[in-house]
Structure formats: structure tokens, C-alpha cells
Length: 134
Image 1 (tube, rainbow, N blue to C red):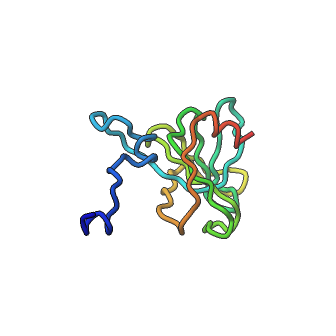
Image 2: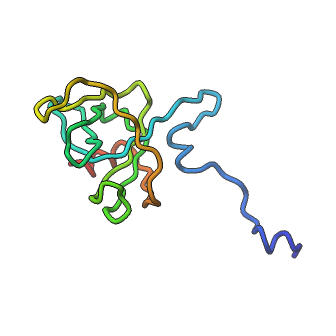
């Protein structure tokens, strides 16, 4: 056995499951917008909301089939201190809203929340997404 095999192993490089899910064809790259929040039902069929704060004042609304991937983030790893989700969407596939009944002013686009602490990964298909949300 060569010394490099002991240190580096013999596995071949392979594409990340996340990259495979959101960009399977590198000749057709697409942008991915990660959002962190609390999943909730929408008033429109086929749509979901992702509340961006624990006060539930701001949210994005998106079609169920526009979810590229998502992670469930346990409460002890969540910056919101409750179980949350990181949802990966195409940048043009959602609408941002501010809840007017709670004193919000407009539908100004909230900023995406970037990295949080380490999470459990769950790169799910749309079928799994539906099962988890119901």
C-alpha cells in the first residue's frame, strides 16, 4: 500500500448530494436562495409560507414545487430557538410579505438569513417535502 492511500483513502470524488439536487447539470447553472424560518400554511392552495422571525411578522410565500432542497434545523441549533427550516429556492420563485395586521408597512423584501450553526441535513424530494409539511 502506498503512503498516500493510508492518508487519503481510495474513494473517488463524487458530486455532493446537495449539488446533485439543486444543480444536476453544470452546463445550466442556476442561482439558489437559502432562507431560514418557520414553515407555515398559506391562504393559497399549493403555496407555503416561511416566517422569517419568531414574531411571524415577515414571511416569504412560495409554490411547493419550487423547493429545490431543504434542511430541518433542530431548536438547539436554530437561531430562532425553535425547530426551523432552511429552504432553498430559485431567487425568482417567491414573494416577500410583511404582515399588515401586526404593524408591518409594505411588502418590502426581507434579506435572506445566511449561515447558522451546524444543522442536520435532509436533502429531500418534493414528495418528502409534502409528507413533512402535512
